Image (cartoon, rainbow, N blue to C red):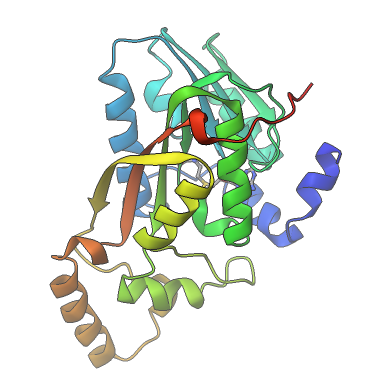
Amino acid sequence: MTKKDNIQIYPEKTIEFFDSISEKYGEKNTTPELELKSNDLIADILLNSSNSFMILDAGCGNASFIKRIANNNKFHIIGIDFSSKMLEVGKRRLNRHNNVKFVQAVVENLPFKNNIFDRISLINISPTLLNKQQFLDTLKEIARVSLPYAKLYLNIWNSWNPILAIKCRRHDMENRPLKTYSSFNMNKLFKKASFKIKRKFYLADDKIDYGSLKRYKKWYKKLGQLIYLYLSRFFIFSPVIVFEAQVDKKYSNEKEVKK
Ligand SMILES: C[S@@+](CC[C@H](N)C(=O)[O-])C[C@H]1O[C@@H](n2cnc3c(N)ncnc32)[C@H](O)[C@@H]1O
């Protein structure tokens, strides 16, 4: 499959959408709070280590996450994304950082050899993957390019959160619903892709961002808010879950080395 074929499996609207938000993505007023919180959390974890890492940021967008960690010269970072506009903005922002490179590619077919990366991030992208099979293919591909015992950081929108479950189904940015996953879905996906979950972080915001539900009647919203605030206290319902998972190559199938 060529790079173009890979990108073409996505509805045109998906890529157009990301191209259209490439200048604004990552700013406080235009980006959901929990996406920024996920970025901050994962950046803190990486920056707290004194090791040198080869890092892959899969679905890097306009480098909103990479710019949080790029000043650490012990990190060599490669960002990949299918949106050329996002990559243009990322390159412009980080043009003085020799330790950062950008490549246009899709996350489920990475243009790298086996066993390269120490740390991989896949942040704020699971809702736009097409389905579970594609998520699994992506995890397997990440396992392939990871060094033995490398760590992967990713977040999901929790399907057990009642407001998100409705909101994502009604999402109209790309004429298709956004994908949510539960912790149970992730246990299975990680296992199939030879990852072991090391830690989970449950993120919650303080109020509901109604977004596409804005037109709902007032009392629906009040009821929604009540249920939401009550359920958010139980971590299994929190809207976003961040996973730290470690690849376990002992159990992964030997694969053909690419390129
Ligand atoms: C919401 S943005 C998040 C960007 C970045 N990870 C961050 O958190 O700052 C999602 C990004 O994933 C990219 N993306 C979505 N699906 C992708 C895929 N299958 N392959 C490559 N990039 C993808 C989009 O172009 C977009 O830039």
